[in-house]
Length: 434
Image 1 (cartoon, rainbow, N blue to C red):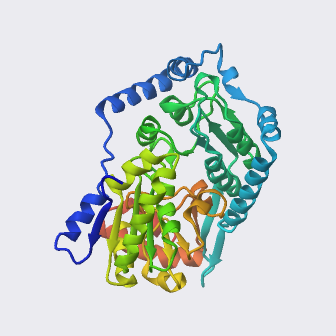
Image 2: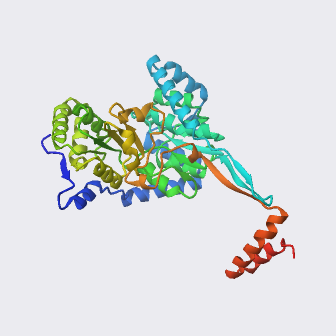
Image 3: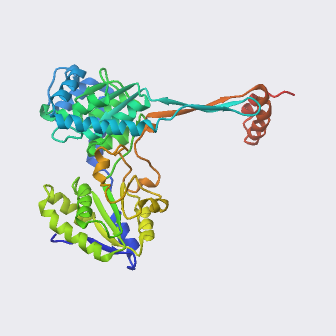
């Protein structure tokens, strides 16, 4: 590369500030985008289908006479599944099988227990009634995102899953529709942008309102999701894709370079970082980057990403590598070391952890089984991957016996009167045996 990738070492005096600068990402939304999105949301909320049709014509250049023309029946999904090349169908079905098997293990059940005086306590786990899945459309094809978002919802028992996918100029992607058929999506509307988010959040005469919206999208979609949060649930506001590789210096440097490229090729703001205690290995990986970059189809995107946001970081040992990784809290973390299991104890913050030299992050994107919808921008400190639990809600169960109401009512009475809430206290006291 003409410009070198950033090199850092933990012994340099300004390491902390240099790392902070490297990780900084401005997720503020342009004022004009905000205003445009709020206008679209307001119009769809007040005018329903009519507004959706107008925005679809304006932004997707798709003019139709009614909303019915923007809904695809299941026959079209099945036809797409039968139309795609056999190898694509087999790959989608195998990936779906693994994603489903993994997420079935996350399914949480209701539970109850009885304490010593016969009081029943517990938790009722209930799936959402309806969820909305946003899928980017047009030339972009993300069938893997359909599987990763739809399958956990279906495993959770969501009553109805509605997918929206824009079809600019009428361009339909068969792999996306095939994935929807495999995942069991219930209804599909060819809508996109902030207007699709608005339709899902508020409901229109044709599109039913959902309880939660998941799935990736452009800046208008992300801004719309942020705006409707509270009216509906959302999965997350995702930042640029990230990969952090910790390597002991014994993995083929070409492998590591390509792993870094696998995220850098997403977009110019993606972040790829390598941490190693072996300075010579960092040199070898940089040489591999320079050698392999000209062979990449998305060379310029990768180059911009690697120079602008990538880094090679030298640390004292793998223990310090884990400490730096925890500060970064990456979306994807590869432990390309001899004994990744031994390192796990030191790793506290990561969206997904890829263990061992043969575990390329790319496998996680498509077919490993765990979800590829992961927290970014350091939010792995407090957030988790998308899962079945995101499509379930929990209700507390409380059923006091007469004896329990007497015993705990005395406690509640004291606490309520201490707070000056006498109606609370008297409500509990009515059930106390004098």
